[in-house]
Image 1 (cartoon, rainbow, N blue to C red):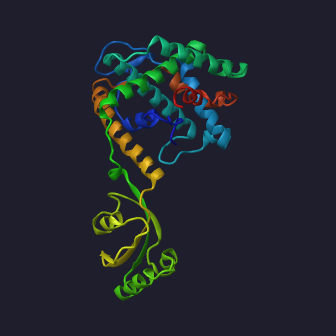
Image 2: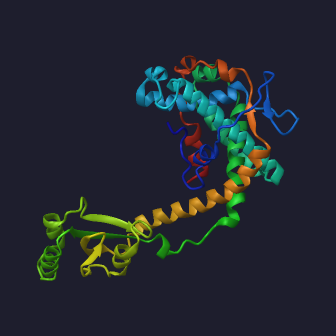
Length: 329
């Protein structure tokens, strides 16, 4: 299970938090608040009503896909059921959200009055859309909703701040993806005959490849670093529509045709992935260091006592969707 709705334009906060999540040991004591191993002050965690906002959001999404019968389904790789894992994931997510807010305060990152006003309007929109039954089940107030929205926004604002200087201009050459067709054979004489046919006007390279290749795929998208060596060097040296000479790689003979010398959409997607990886590394350098000095864990008893079967009648799965619509256009 992956958890929450992914953010669209900024760094994907849920992905980052779960990537940074490490299994740690915490000494648990008392029954309320947020524990910090290397600090002594008490910092308030989230209330049960605030936790239920997120729990209901995720539970409703899964119920619509799988019905409420999913709660008792065992989850592979764990000793628990779907209910156990969902509660654990939400708890871990909100622990990391709280940690990011603490780091934001230390770094001097805060919400502006305009941002608070916009988040208050968003909170009112979400709350007004809840049915009376939803409000009874979740038990939240408009202030609860606004608090979670503000923390979520602040966490994203912190991430933007931490990665602002890490923006890297990924070159088109580095991100470039091309589309090629290949013919592969273990017989050199056969490869020579195919190459001769491929040079004759009217012969369709794709048809030749489908007929003679020993490779599992004829048409492939290729990015730098995916194949390396002579194969990659040859493929990227071709102009669109050009057919290579025979090259030998690993005892096999290849003939390559470039069918798309610059896949614009695939290249843009790869560029975004590469830039996101750079941003994530920049963020993790700061986050990991802070987390090692400020490991936190909620110790409110309600996390162990939550019964998701009591929340199944609620139908409020648009908490993050509304946020996306307002802040990630």
